[in-house]
Image (tube, rainbow, N blue to C red):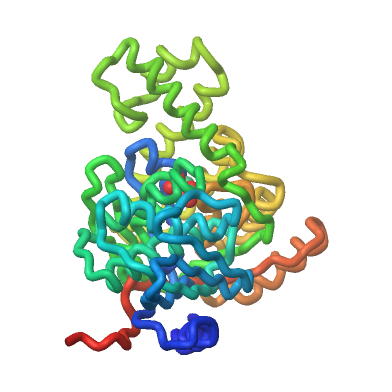
Length: 391
Ligand code: GLA
C-alpha cells in the first residue's frame, strides 16, 4: 500500500504547508454481478488493498487547487467557476466539488494533492476511489455531515455529470463501505446491504491486468445502459409495473423484446441470467463451495463476452488460459470491460506457477506483459491523518 507520508511530502512541496488531512479510498473488486448495478439487481463487490490518497488543506484565495502526482499536472479554478474541464483527471474531483456546492456546503478555497496505486483504466475503479476520497476529504475539511450513503451518491453523480459515464452505484459504494475480509451483497434498488465473510480457505484472489486500457466513457458503457433501458421500455408496454430489468424474467424478454430487436434482447438476457447467477453464487459462497462459485464466474465471463459484448480478445485469452488449470476455480473479466483485469480464484499452492505460465503465454500470443496482483480485501474510505488542530 502507498504511504501517507509520501503524499504529505508531495503536498508540502507543492503548497508550502502541511496538509490538514489525508484521506484514503480503495479500489474494488466485484466477485460476481457485472453490469447489474444500473439494472437495480444485486452485486457482490469488496474494497481492496490498492487505494487513492488525497491530501487536503485550506487556501485563502477561494480557489480550488489540484495536483496529480501521477500525471505531475496541476489544475486551478475559482470556486465560482467550477465546471467540467478538458483535463480529464480533474473532472473526478471537480464533479465532487460541484455536488457539495449543489447542496450549499460552506466551501472555501482548498488545495489538494493526490496519488495512488490503483492502476488507471484497469477495471479496479480508480475513478470511484478518487471521487470518494475527494468527497470524504471535503467533508472532513469543511466539517459537513453528509451521511456516508449520500457521499457515495455524490461521487456517483460526479461521474455522471463531469466524467460523462452513466455508471451505477457499485464502485463508489464499495470504496466507501468496504470492510476487511468481507464482500458486500448490495441491493442496488433499495441500497440495503449485507457484509458476507470473504476469507477464502487456501485460495488467492488474483487479478491479472491485461494492460489493455479501457475507456468507459468511450460510449460503449452508456450504450449498454441505454439498450437495457430500451428493453425495459418494451417490457413495460405489456407489464406496466416493471421499473427495471430487476423486475424482468426470461419469459417476459421472450415475449416483449425478442420479436423487436435481437441485439437488445441479447443484452437484456445477459442481465437477467446474471441476476440469477449472483443469487446462486451467494449461496455457494455461504456454503464455502468455491468450486461451484468458480463455475458461475466462468459463466459470467461467457455472457459478458458473447451476449453483452464488453470483453476483448486479451481478456478472452486470459479466461481461456485459466480454464486449462484445475487449480483455477473461476475466472472472468471484471468491471466495465474492454480491457483491465480478470479476477481469478486460484489455489494458493499453484498461484505462483500459474501466474508465471499464463504471463509467458500472454507475452507470446498477445505480445505484451501481464501484471498480476494478489489481492487482499480491506476496509473502505477513511481519514488516515489529521494534522489540523481541533480547538
Ligand atoms: C463500471 C461502473 C459500475 C458497474 C461496472 C460493471 O465499473 O462504474 O457502476 O456498472 O462497470 O459492473
